[in-house]
Amino acid sequence: MLVRATTDSPIATGADTIAIGLFAGEQVKHDLPNGLASGDSAGARGGALQALVDAGEAKPAFKRLALWHAEGVRWLLVGLGDRAAFDPERARVAAATALARAKELGTRELCWELPHRVSAAHTAAFVEGTILAAYDYRAHKSGGDEDDADAPGAPETLWVSAHDPVDGPVALGVSAGFAANVARDLQNAPPNELTPTALAERARAIGEDHLTVEVMGREEIVAAGMGAFAAVTQGSEEEPALITLRYEHPDAPPEAPVLGFVGKAVTFDSGGISLKPGAKMAEMKFDMSGGAAVLAATEAVAREGLPLRLVAVIGATENLPSGRAFKPGDILRASTGTTIEVINTDAEGRLVLADCLAHAVAQGAERLVDVATLTGAIVSALGSTYAGLIGDDDAWCAAVEAAGAAAGEIVWRLPLHPEYAELIKSRYADVVNAVENRKAGSITAAEFLHRFTGDVPWAHLDIAGTAWDTGRAYAPKGGSGMATRLLLELARAHAHAA
Image (cartoon, rainbow, N blue to C red):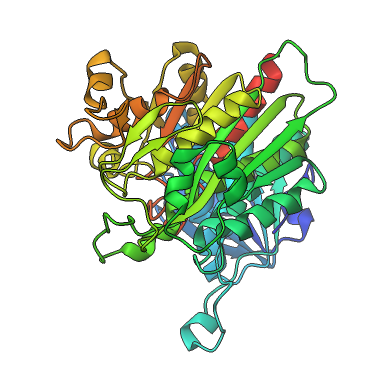
């Protein structure tokens, strides 16, 4: 989708469909000439579009839609609800609602006339919501299915019309929306295609233009003493990849802390020897969603040229059962020297992240965020609305929470406590990788990760409930790209604060 900002009137853009937002209690701005008879009282107070509102055909209630044809184009009236309640997330949802109707209408060029007196954040959100809602993963559709062939496509062009120039916020919306869709492409790809090697190749491809990229394979991971990560890789014939991306802008203030993004990328998780149930196991291709978000956000940071320093680490592997697979009862030694008793091989993500977090610290990260589909417990606790946030630094966690709120990827902070740390102590090693009594599953998993972050301020995002099939208007099915926009917003804020 091509996105263009303009100060021209909507009709001057040549768009075949024009979306206009309606706030409760407000008149339609820039109305059309009234085509009703002069004696019709419904049209006496304004133009043709206001007449639709006055007649009750168009309503300002949030997400309500009405269609009008005039001057050779379609006019799509979109309810925005009360202005006081209209935040950027509502702008994303309204944009997605309008986009869905525009697709049904066969729209080729859609123009949003921005409502008066909305912020730059709202403007970017209208763009994001449209781009996200336009996403459609069809890489493996043959085109032979009749229903598939008749599926409406998204508009080719989005115009954003405003009185004053809005090129800046529109560009930010484009960057965030397309970054999230990059992550969704990675998430939705089948696991026989998106192997750890393929993910590493994708990282190398973006590194050619923006970043420096290093990839460690199985032998290098073992040689580096990363016994936790190496153990998870044992059961699969696929080569694992520890991917490190470095970005350093020449204008980055030398005193500003180096950001560290760490992502779990288990490209397929069977559970290993502790095999998962067969039902919905196909969804375990999404266990690389944290790595997808980190890769896509890092690419967007570099593309935007943000003045900061960033190191991103992605641990990519499969977790499969075989005669070589690691087992419950095994004791592993991570790169920090910490020993780990394996209780459950399906608690593999924290083993991968343990060595990845320590590696990020060793590479100079001074502010850490890790992103992972880590626990089913977070789904029980928060559903698909919030991602879990756990961290050891109040200021850093507040920055992550603020970035999530700005991006529409909201998080809920859960506590750390010495009593939770006691639960992961092992009889035979330093720590266990899972707590058998199932108490505080998400928090004890985070306490495990905490052992590998050193003295660096750290925040952990458990996105197991929000990474796919969220039901959101702009990402209802499949990968959601969760945390991509949050990480990008965090990097923007970090760059501007320096």
